[in-house]
Amino acid sequence: MVAPHGLSIRTYVVLSTVASNPGMTQLALGSALGLDKTTVTAAIDRLEQAGLMSRQPAPGDRRARVVHVTDPGRALAHQVQAETTARQAALFADVDQVDLDQMVRTLQHLAFGPFVESAPVTGSCI
Image (cartoon, rainbow, N blue to C red; front, side, top):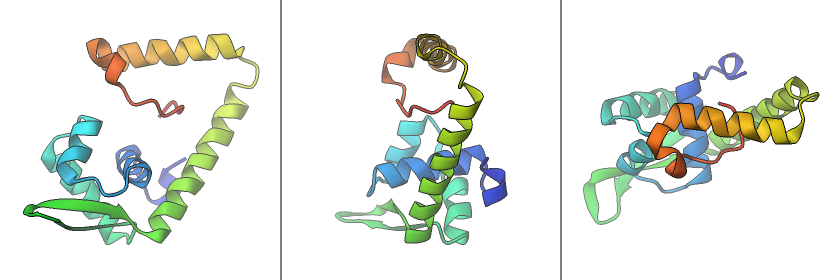
């Protein structure tokens, strides 16, 4: 779903997180996603080169960088989210909502372990 748009799962998650939380610092973004500084920087580099994100010095702290999604980046994030939602709806059309909710909770427990209560609630399987 993301590859045809020139994104990886990681770059899409970074893009969509910043689109939903404008004005985050790179450090806050990495913390929110559980990614180290090098990984976040590499993802932002790729998104910035594609014209989907920009970064500027944080007000009051020139060492920190605030990341922003550009208009094309915001449009792409919305498009990929719509495609993902449609694909998931088709894939799980015959699954009872109670069972689907339980599956998502189980996957979150597997992915986040003891930190499941602080896991992001995206409504998406990705």
